[in-house]
Image 1 (cartoon, rainbow, N blue to C red):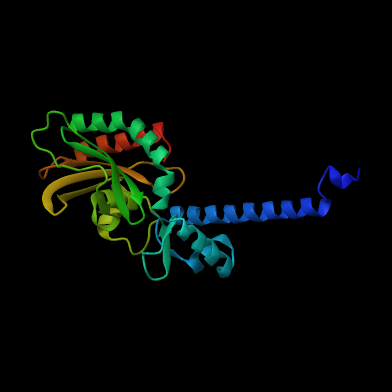
Image 2: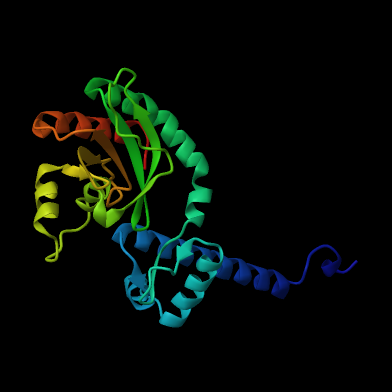
Length: 244
C-alpha cells in the first residue's frame, strides 16, 4: 500500500498545525484583552487596548467583536469604550461558590463581633455586587443588604474601597486620597440615609482588588478608627484562604 493509506500527506498535517497555531494565538490574544481590562480597572478604547498589547486596531476590533458576542465584554459604557461583561459572571459561578464558602465564616465572625451586618462585594465593571451578606444574630437594628444588590463603584463605600487600590491619578479627589492613605473607606451616609459603612479591599497580588468587605451600621458611629482594623483584618484573612 501507499504510505498515504496510513497517514495524511505532510502538507495536510502542516496545514492543521498552522490552523492550530492560529486558533491558539487568537485565544491567547482574546484572554490578553480581558487581562488588560481587568488590570486597568476601567473601560478602555480599542486604540488603548491595541497599544497595551502591541497589536493593530483591525486585529483588536475582531477580538472585541468576538468577545462581545459571547458577552465577555460590554459596549454599553459609551464613548467607544469597552469593559468586562456580565458573561464572565456565568463562567465564574463555581469560583463564586468556592469564594462564598471560604469567606462565610470570616464574614459571619465579623458581623457577630461588631453586632451588625457584614457583606462581601465583588467588582463587576463599574458596579459592586454583594455576593454574601450576614447579619449578626442578636443585632437589635441592622441595615438590610440582600445578596445580589448592586452599588455604583463611584458612589458607594464599597466602591471607594476598591478604587483605593487603583493606580493613583492626578484626578483623584480628597476622599479617595484619604482612603488610600488609611487603607480603608468610611462614610456616614449609606444609600441616602444617615448611617455608617466601613469597607476594606481584599488584597490582590495580581493588581487592583476585585473584592471588598463592608460592614453597615444603622446609625452614625464615632469609633470608626477602632472598628476599621477589624474590617481590614477580615479582608486580609479572606485573601489568605481564597485567591480572587
